[in-house]
Length: 104
Image 1 (cartoon, helix red, strand yellow):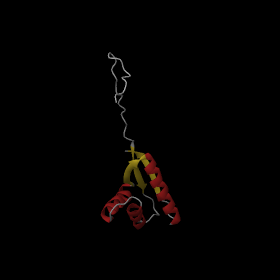
Image 2 (cartoon, rainbow, N blue to C red):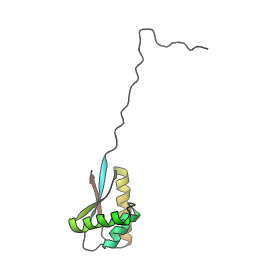
Image 3 (tube, helix red, strand yellow):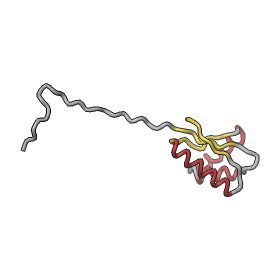
Image 4 (cartoon, rainbow, N blue to C red):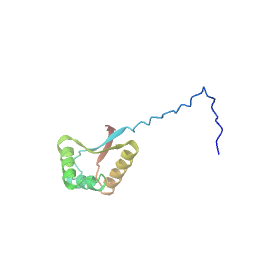
């Protein structure tokens, strides 16, 4: 069985290529304050950002010593979810921990 040719002999079928852009990435930042304990910051980094204890401690020390530290780099939607999780857990534990995002 043969299919009818829908193109004449002088036509050329062109395939259109679609380029998909990679989504923009953002950094999730934890900010230092005078009330949130270092242990709680480590807990946040382990539980929400899935850092091992050594990575979590290093980020926590950056937060403590430099004023902020990068908890992770994600797409915008994931950043927003992580920030909400941090703020919810901090509020439950009565800590004023600030978590923000900025372009990576």
